[in-house]
Image (tube, rainbow, N blue to C red; front, top):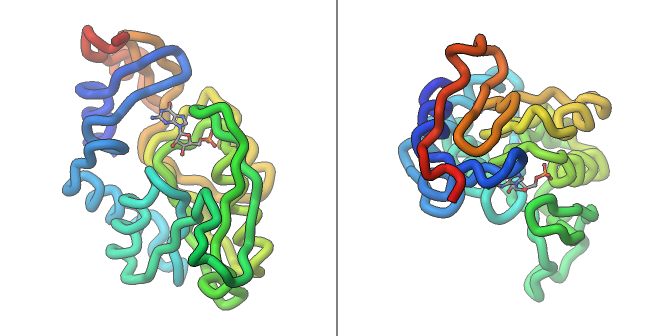
Length: 206
Ligand code: 5GP
């Protein structure tokens, strides 16, 4: 998705060769029109798959799951990271290790909202180590639901996430795939060197 690549080039802050900050338009302040466009793109990519639910994980997947749910005209569910007192019913749960926070936490969703009749599209903001998405894939399978695939807004293709999902037979679509990055420089998958080596903002290292 060209528009997304351009925004990453213009506004992304590359904190290291592994961490990209996109807080100004994707996952802290959110450009709502871009989020809706991302939802439409996911809906287009998974058109004809008879999706009944979109699934994500709180918090930064929510705006994209909602946008995809609107475009597909289906509900979305977000897995909760802490079991709320209001979540008294039976849950599906998985353990996830967070790459950015360096901690392991439990994600859960109520068994009321996912079952064998569902066909699920999982979406998230980033695909990095794949831990969060593998957790959601396990939950979908435990529920006996069918998985249509995974849609990611940004994939860091130099990390192992895509490989882990594909090993599990999961179909992955990412809207921007980063082949490599370092402060001041970013390369997207599928572009030749000259086109892809967009310099990124000078203050990208801050
Ligand atoms: P995972 O390592 O499980 O694929 O990524 C889990 C979560 O970590 C993502 O959903 C995303 O919220 C966060 N994350 C991973 N890599 C990055 C990154 O480079 N930048 C930001 N902002 N978040 C990231």
